[in-house]
Image (cartoon, rainbow, N blue to C red; front, side, top):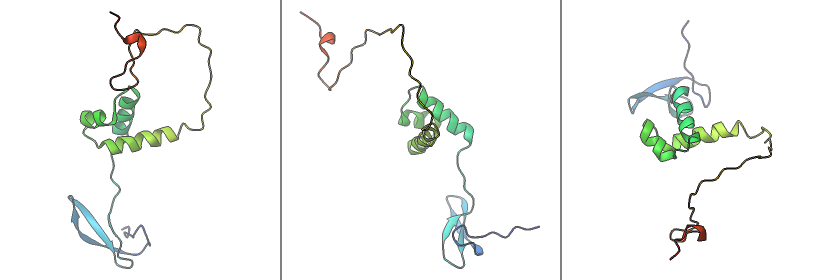
Length: 120
């Protein structure tokens, strides 16, 4: 059984219309809509690896360099992933022990907090 290919916009018959970036392009005979026939994307294991890198604290452009994918794609994957956890209620927990580093944090480019300034 041969499946007839249809336009995703109007459902009418489509015809081949050249190539774009090495992929077959189609054009609808009825509405003139041009598109690439199949929806191609990155496999889920690539998306999950990028999200894992993000959760480990890497920036979007760093992930782009590590994995060879667009940082915009990574942003979209993270947003989609985060939207699935919107409705999960946050659980508050009391903290018994809190440990802090002796790290200096500055609020502006050249202005450090008083605790970080060296005393003469």
